[in-house]
Every structure is written in structure tokens, then in C-alpha cells.
Image (cartoon, rainbow, N blue to C red):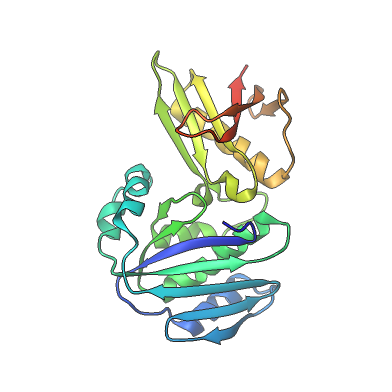
Length: 252
């Protein structure tokens, strides 16, 4: 994907475009200090907006999101048990894209999230797939979190998929999908001996640090976490299929 572009798919119950005035009103309500959302072009299947320095567009596709594209994300969506059943109802979808040539990737993701929080209630959406992580989300839950965004409290679980798996020897491993959209390496942990909840909390804090700070972490660097926890960073090849480079975090 072009680094300037952030993407999401909105699953629709019917092949109907969202209510345009409601989207504009929603953006104004949740972002009163930002530039107005201005329509720059409109057809029967596509609407393009200018929102400050960003261009936002959605395109109506008269068919569902491919089943194979949703199967894995639905299976991993522990936070939305009915994901597969709800998304099976959709008959069409929107491709929603935000293009901004600026260098602040976090600002782009926040802006797309805010736009979606206005679009979802103005449509007959039954679900959402976030492009960077391929996660699926229930519309009302997504909107509830999206309207409370701040840089000090980023809703990373909307954008980054954190997956925990059991290893031999009763330890755990964790990996992320979605940090690459912020121009950051994905995060991995192996041989963790604590609880799944503690591992999730630690990984969330580490990911927040990577995204919010935007700094480059060096190989061998140590990072302190809440509770006087120390982790050592190493550059590694992912333990998943492929040869992608990741940041491996070892707990001291």
C-alpha cells in the first residue's frame, strides 16, 4: 500500500450509499475545530471529499467482501464473538481510503478513524475491516472508541491485531499485525512465562510507545514498562511464515 494511503472496508447489508449530510454533520460534531468536510466529486458509486490537507473517498462495490478475506480475521476476533454470523449478512461493501502526503502516519490513521465514526452511523453497515491489520470490528463498538481518540490514549486495538498463542512448555508467544501501517516493525514476544492478560498489557504498552513516540529502537536497547518490568529489544526474523523483519522483545 502507498504509505500516504490508509484504507478500510465497510460491509453493508444493502447496496446503498451512506447518507452524505449525516457524514458531514458527524465529522463536524466530533471534530469541531478541524476544517469542514467538503465534497469535491460525487457519482452514483463514489464520493470524494477534501478534509483539510487530506483527501477521503468511498467507493460502493456491489458485492460482498470475499469470504476468504474475512474468514481468518473473524476466527481471531475474540472481542466480537458474532463476527462471522454478522458479516455473513452483508451484500455489498464500501472501500474507504484516506490519502495524505504528510509524514505523520498517526495523524492519518486518526483522521480515517474519525471519518469512519461519522460514516458508519450514516450507513447500513454490519461490520468493518481495518486495512492495516485486516481486523474486523462491530460498527457501534468501533464508533464508541473512535470518538474518544487522543494521542495520549490511542485505541490501538482498533488498528493493531494482538494475537497470543501457547507454546510448548506452558509459555506464551505474541505477535502483532498492523504496526507496519505506522511505518514500524511488527512486535513479537516468545517464551513468556506470565499470564495472557499481563502479556497483552505489556505488548499494548510497547506498541503504544512505538506508535506514539515514533522513535527508532536500536538492537539491544532496554525499555522500562510499568511495574518495574524491563525488556530487551532485538531485531529478528518473524517466527511466522515468511522472512519479514520484526522487533523481538525479551523479558528480563
